[in-house]
Amino acid sequence: MTKRYGDPAKGVDALAGVDLRIAAGDLVGIVGPSGSGKSTMLQMLGGLDHPTSGRVLFDGTDLAAMGDAALTAVRRDEIGFIFQQFNLIPTLGAIDNVEVALVPAGAPAAERRERAAAALESVGLGHRSDHLPSQLSGGEQQRVAIARALVGGPRVLLADEPT
Image 1 (tube, one colour):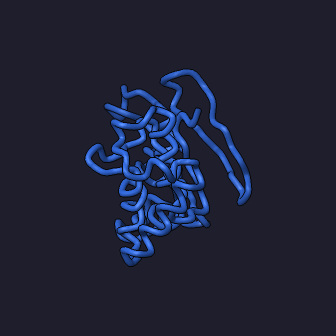
Image 2: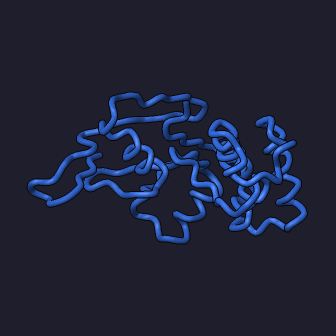
């Protein structure tokens, strides 16, 4: 797979000739210097962006060939994302930031709340569930983001700069 930004002839290749297979149960770390394409690779693997050339297959299906609804369903049901900047909603408490991940799946409100509380407990933040992101340390914000990524029970977890 290749991902080129800018002009097709003179652009910048963020990824060039990547060939990668990841099997169920594999733990893979992608390392490299800043600007080497790590975040771009995660965006491709998660179906958030499409390669300029080549394919990204998830369970044998090319993510770029999927329609919007099918791709949304894969991202909602199969892939958990932990973004580099956490992407927490600043006006929502920790539990609400986790719970929001369950809304697109149509889970009932009581079930969403229970699962979000359990996810926060699992990362050691049950006691901070009502705190806004601005009231949490950077590490606590990251754990809220981890709880949000895990609450739906994804088969794949993609973490950008997880340390």
